[in-house]
Amino acid sequence: MNTKLKGTVYSKDTVEFTTVAVQYCFLLESFEEASMNDLTDKLLKILPLLYLKASLVPAADMETDDEQEVTVTEENYDYILHRLYAVFGKDDIYLEVFMQDMKYSETPISASVSEDLTDIYQDLKNYITIYERGIEENMNDALVICTDNFKAYWGQKLVNVMRALHQLKYSFADEYGNYPGEEEDNEMEEIW
Image (cartoon, rainbow, N blue to C red; front, side):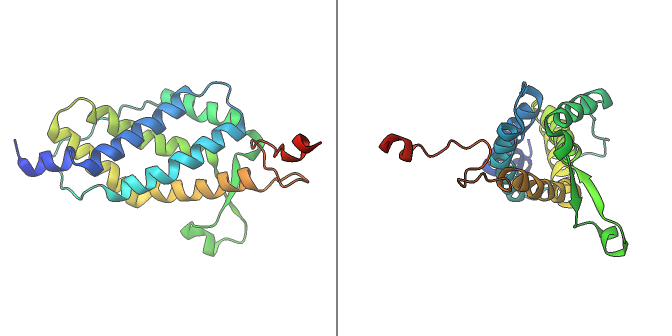
């Protein structure tokens, strides 16, 4: 086996990226009746880590000319998308400011939290499904495609959706300075 190839697919950075990708996919596949605050909080913790780990993956070249298998079907995609939309509802749409078309547009361009999160899920799930099979040439090629897509596509979606999620989490403080989903400071109550 090619030592360079092994060094890429089993490197510490690749394994850590894959671990976070698995955790992200698991979160989107398994949340049940989560509140918007709870899901937003979890996403705001995993998305920065996902960005960091994706940016640390070692550069590699494709090993085969084979077309990569797509494991996320349209039904899988729609299922995740609709579950996320059910949680975010009216807060799903946000204004997009980092699109090339924006500078030529006289009207605002909107994006969808649920669609951006599902797009990220799709690339990561396609990657980890192939990676888990353990065929090193395919693992490498899936990694190359996923990280190329990160640079060209879903990395920007990730930082954009983080901006929207940050707004959801921290823009609605109550009169005591508490944000939704945070425990109120009970120190004053204990004194009385």
